[in-house]
Image: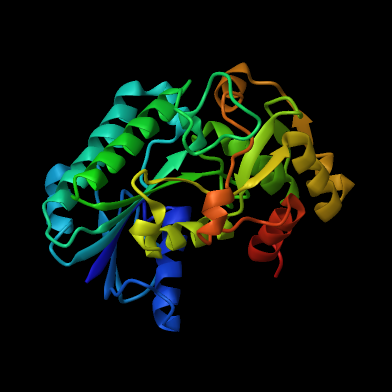
Length: 320
């Protein structure tokens, strides 16, 4: 029995794979499996005999049907063209994020055991006038290409679940901060770089007003919640499979205050303010807080505060 992780060669996908293996080793996993298959354009970095790394595109329908076989018990669909890349290349966003998602769903539809299907969505599906705290039943109104394609993905996963083709779980993830490595094509990439770069002695810039409110999660909390979404009983979620994953509501200015407390004034001095209207138009349309009472009742978790998030990055990727 196997679990497939699209985007398994990336930072978040590889950590999901490792968490699944750790759960299996500890005997805490709720779903039995023998193998994890990573599908990505890059090699999966997890070195384990139970991990098979397949290099290929989510847009390759023939490849998907080869990988998604009768012994597939679960799928994590993390692969996507991110927000900045989607805005710059509409056709690529449609091909990967819409056509690729549907092709994966069709492959899953063809097997008999109704696999669990975790789809990572985004708070970018929202826009327009929003309440201070966004409920799960609020209609989507995306103001970016990325938000639009993710909104389509949500509807597809819900419909394939309603028809009994899959057992879907849609996780609207907060922006992940702090990611290690280099900036990516996400419009929200600065949410990591204004912490990561100064903590590594490099300059960075904040491209949005410091009072911009962001909905954030550490990598550890995000991975914990994705695995939890996979393992809980689908009947506990209900018919509408969208889950507002818990996060922290903080402003860019509060993030910089946390940086100062954890890493000192010298690190804070490396961050300048350089307004970027394009980035602000995308990120500024996203909500800064969500109603997560129901998801918390289902066992989903969040970080305590953003100081803890900065400390987590320091401990995991700098210390030692």
